[in-house]
Image 1 (spheres, rainbow, N blue to C red):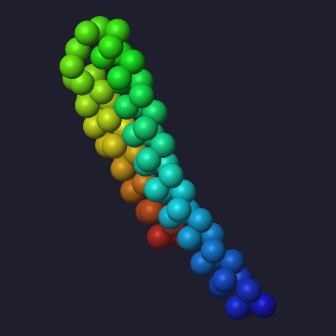
Image 2: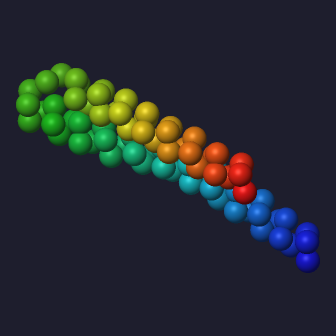
Image 3: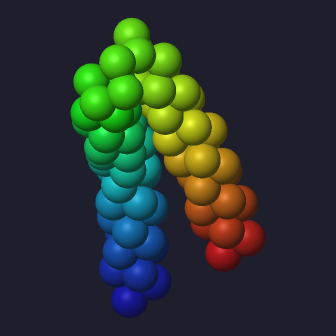
Length: 74
């Protein structure tokens, strides 16, 4: 019974780590898409895109660090 719970916890942690990569990639993709549209609308050359990608990266990394701290406490 204990072995089963241990495997389930390992699988759960694996799925969380997989989700972290998807979260990072997805947020950067969405913000870069929005940035490209705004750059085209306002006539800038990748200024808004780079700013939004950097913002997405920082916010996502903060979120990932919080999730990892929570996992460590469990």
